[in-house]
Length: 218
Length: 95
Image (cartoon, rainbow over all chains, first blue to last red; front, top):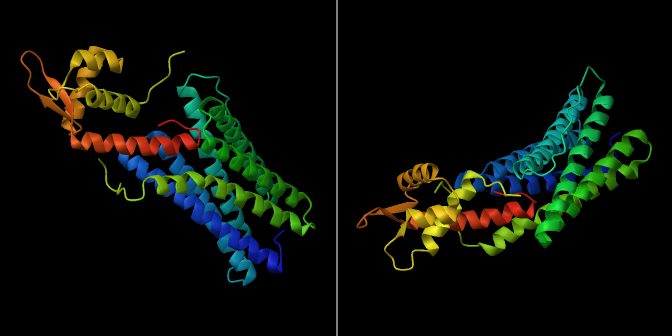
């Protein structure tokens, strides 16, 4: 259920913050792909591009809910936004899965669930569960990576992903308890704080290399 | 257990060797690159051809065999590699 009034406005604003953060990370990753042809960065760029588009679609739907223009499209577009977001989390999990397989460590197989004809709310629930699963896998792998590298940045990313995962869980709860409006706001705040934490490497990148022009392949 | 190296990591290792071991300025021989790069002769020869072709390494004519030195473009590649490796590691990933 969509929140109303001020909650909806705040939620929508936060969706657009998510768009900015996701596209910033995707942009830096894409520059990295152009510079180094790294497949890890390509998967990271793909993940955050999907997340950015997912937040964008959800943000646009939120704007439409405040002032309806396309009421018949709303449900389909919400599911499309969630699908984009889930795909983003899938690529994030895939990045870690490929990294694990290349390191020849114990790989945890990603399960792909078949999706049959389902109602929009059932589909939203399934996408929420899948997103939660993918994000938690990312938390697990990032924490493992931190235990080896002991980099504070990596720990922050693990915390950020855990916050996003918790946000997705609360989002799923908000589908179950649709009368509790505050859950919707709590989930988006948790996801946004998580996303802002993921923004740390971008800030670090800009701080460490302020004058470096990196456009164009080397 | 041996750590898997991606192609871009191998390239960075070879370029780093060509940069660090070229103390006299006359280039680095393939033997040193092989020892430090931990690659077979065939694979290293192919990689060196590609790196010279891409302008990342300079091939210098020695008395007996060719020697290699890192080019300005190669140094630029290493700088970019370092930056993005740091970025990827923040996400718990390797380049």
